[in-house]
Amino acid sequence: MSVVAAYVYRDGKRVREASLTREGLTLAKGEFLWIGLYEPTDEEFSALVERFGIVARTAEGKGDQILYGETHLFVGADHVITIRHGSARGHTPLRAQLEASPVQLRHGPDLIVHGVLDFIVDAYMPIIDAIEDSVLEMEQVALDRFLSRADITRLFHLRRQLVRFSRLLGPMEDVATKLHVLELPPIDKDVRPYFRDVADHVRRVSSRAAGLRDIVSSVFEVSNLLEQQRQGVITRKLAAWAAILATPTAIAGIYGMNFAHMPELEWSFGYPFALALMVVICGGLYALFKRSRWL
Image (cartoon, rainbow, N blue to C red; front, top):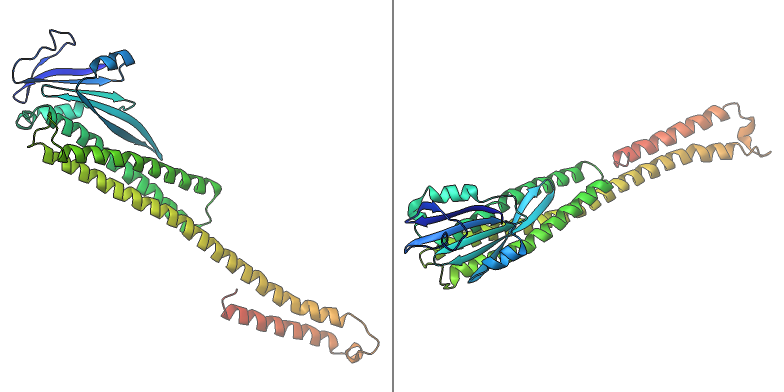
């Protein structure tokens, strides 16, 4: 069994380490037990399932990827057991923080449950901050240039991460809300208001996640509009140059027909006049297109 820590507390202070034996788990009046486990086997897990359980989904950001895990809490009047699966973020800092405040820890297991949930939810905000930075970066990329296949793939990846993350936030908010509203035997009425803050925290993260999903969708829309605009600019430029080049082509085509009855064929100024006409018309068209911002 991967026992991270197992201690007995009285009056908000650690009094001794608890061995996982019948004698070691025997508690005196006013004492409670906090056991922290990490990825126990199925047999070990089944042996610890008592009373009721809470499952809190943990999350950890790694670049654009979110790694998920679970923390199970088994709570009674004199004990709280936390079991982590797939979460590398241990509760040692939380334990030290709670032990540094005996007045609060004196409340017992229910305050530890709040501390664990609050500890888990606190990790959500850096994740949403990192995703927000990535989304805003992609938004700037879309304004600067055409999105490449890799850019589009990354945007879809970020959107998938936000959708999966939102699925986690809903149940987590429900858990915190129930602990705040419902009268559960291990949760003291004086501690219940603390869980409202946890639920509010989850709602804020959920609101930001929904906003980022909208931004990702808008990035696609803006990128598509800008691409259409750029293609329109290119099309107008090509059409303008085609019109300019068509003028000398038409004049040269007519002049080069060499019909027998064309007065200008015997006119000594015919060739320079044709060239001058081409320059004037092309220059006029260029000025017109430039003024209309087609060039």
